[in-house]
Length: 146
Image (cartoon, rainbow, N blue to C red; front, side, top):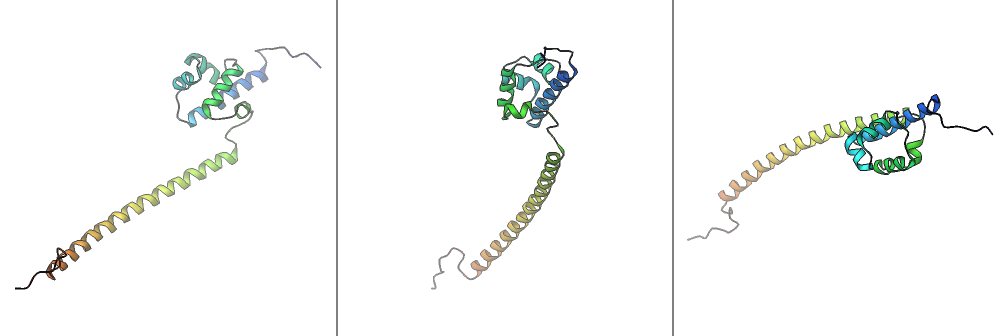
C-alpha cells in the first residue's frame, strides 16, 4: 500500500476542505446564526472560523465535533461529502415553504372570519339584551307588579 503524505497542495484535499466549510456554513445559516456567534459557541476565533468556512484552513477533529454538536448534527453528517441540499431535500424544503405560505393565508382568512363572527355575536347579544329588557327580564329578575 502506498504511503500517503499530508500535502496541502493536494487538489482533492483542498476541495474536501472547501466542501466541509460550505456544509458548515449552510447548516449555520439555516439556523440564522452569525459566524461570530457560532465561532464563540464552539470556542474558536472568528478569523479562524472564517477560514474554516471558506475552506482555507485545516480543521481539527475536535473543532468538527464541536461544530456538529452546536449544529445538532452527527459528525458523520458534517463530514459527508456531496451537496447537503440534494434535489429531493431541496424539493421537500420548497414544498414545505409552499405549505407554510398556504397555511399562513388560511390562518389570516380564519382570523378575519372570526372577527366578523365575533362582531355579529356582539350585535346579536346586544339585540337579545334589548329584547329581554323590553320583556322585563333584563336583569334576570322579574319586575314586581303593583
